[in-house]
Amino acid sequence: QVQLVESGGGLVQPGGSLRLSCVTSGIIFSNYVVGWYRQAPGEQRELVATLTSSEQHNYADSVKGRFTISRDNAKNTLWLQMNSLKPEDTAVYYCNVDRGWGPRYVYWGQGTQVTVSS
Image 1 (cartoon, rainbow, N blue to C red):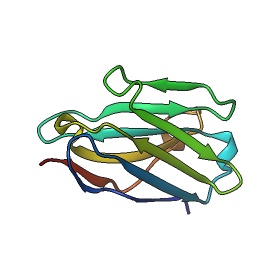
Image 2: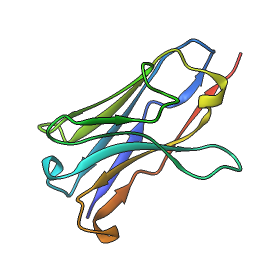
Image 3: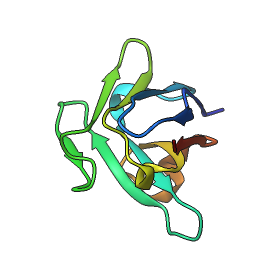
Image 4: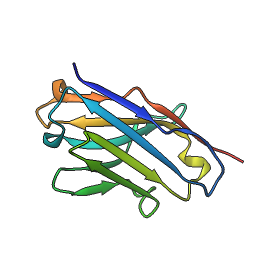
């Protein structure tokens, strides 16, 4: 059974930092592209960042230079370091792993709330 367990969300003031974690099980983690997505109220889910096993990064323009995605294949874990947070970063953040074989091999975490507010 594939599981993705997220942690690290919370309330932070503008300009602050948070680090999200996602521990996976039930997959050969190194075979997957990993990513973070977010969904704000009333909005569609959007890509934040992705990372391949060969360390190819992709970031949404809105987070470039502020967020960093990373992974440890030995720990089956991915992270999202978020710095210089803005109120518009407020959303539920979801981790994602994608084998690249179609939707049956795409898995999601349960989501963790990030709220940026003074």
